[in-house]
Length: 498
Image (cartoon, rainbow, N blue to C red; front, side, top):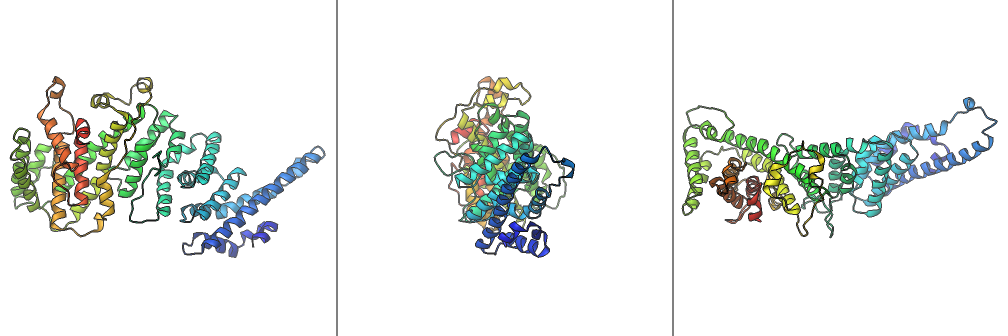
């Protein structure tokens, strides 16, 4: 068929041919050899067409002076363009195939199509970004080269499709991932540990406005309202941790926005958990965002138990010996208020992953670049670019390893059965997390050189959340714990915990 179509391209418009080609390319159960054959047919057609065009060009130059342009009709290039638009979507979708040979031929077809200018390049950009994460260097380089060419001709196209490209690259990695139990990671497993999408970032980072818009839209995926799946968040966090940052402004900008997201998403998470608890007969509800009224908002026994819970926690700054028994009381008090339906617990464990990953990411960037808390706090995105234009001194041997989230994904917590032990661990996460959120902002007292009680509380919560104290029996719990710790520990505490 392929040879017949080279001689008579118009046959490719036939309904039977369209159905045959598209069904072979889009059917997941179809044989790999058939898919490759269809892609090869398209590839040889485009190559022959290219040769034909070049020959026609040479012939034209010989007779150009005698001919009248108005009488010439260049039908062939219009035909190859129409043909490629018929099959383009299915060829692009072949990028998500498990077999590298299928991806290889699909990329060849797309490269030929783009080089001949048969289609508008913007629709290919996200797919080319995704192919730039392929494990095979030759394919990676070919996809990256196409992106560079597009960027030269059409400035802004890459930035426009960057986030869509990141999401697609996750799908490619999922397809390539041979062991479904292992979470998909976003960096190369070699000595460089570079981000899979590092070439994309290096293309965008030169334009400050584009770079910031790209980073903000990635961080927005971690928002509790975005409902992004946990493994994709892990993949994006890996990339953000390993991007090739060059100036101090880049990681500082990310940390600044992580703080903003945490303060909003963290309090939303706590509020939704509180609302899911069973209330007593008194139905007084005073919804309020601040922590003091939160304890009132849960009426009856729960509010008393929460007050009891919070008092010992605050006293814990001074009295250490009772802390373990106090914590037990806290956990038991909240356990009594848990609803019979365990869905809110699972939801809490799930949503807290995004917050946890942001905390881990902030801590990682802080350790990687050696920033102090005060430097992070003083940073303002509106300051002139020159202030933070200094190069980063990267520390070696700092790796991003969000253990809690990895455990959560490996144990398939979202679909597993809830035992009493798991419930306890999630409640403990919740309490640690609540404490972290209360002390998220550093106190003014610290500036006077005193170590404030709130700092001590924050450090303690972080240690607890990150699993410094008691051994964790459950993946979900660990995650939350960690997240809390990090939340709180936007600063020194994180380092101590490490």
